[in-house]
Image (cartoon, helix red, strand yellow):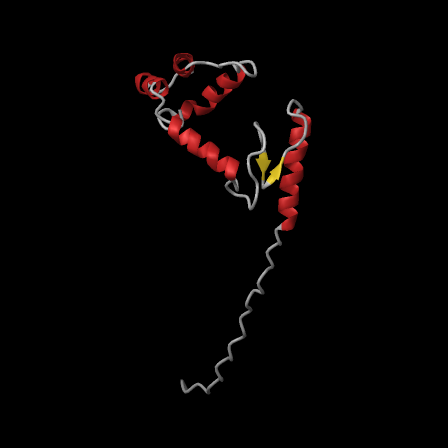
Length: 144
């Protein structure tokens, strides 16, 4: 989706979450995944369907998963994927209730606030002041 129909990427992810299979089940097969993609209105249905049904990105997904398990996760010094799902904000892992929007919002606001206050405020540079120019000496007028 991100490659062939990026405008529908979030709509497709939403549908995947809404239609999430039971834990420890086989999940949706490639045809069902492609049907779901077409249902959200992809730009190029034939290309997206072929990509999903022929598993074009399976190798990439396996390699990305392996990198996440070995760590560190991008943007962190030492985090590795410990569980799925795992939410990381500014290098901090969310450990709150996954079904609590209020708790998650508070976590994000706290992390953002910590990052904001940890960043030193820029200091103002002194504004140069202009020195008064010496006034030219008055010379006697010779218009007489």
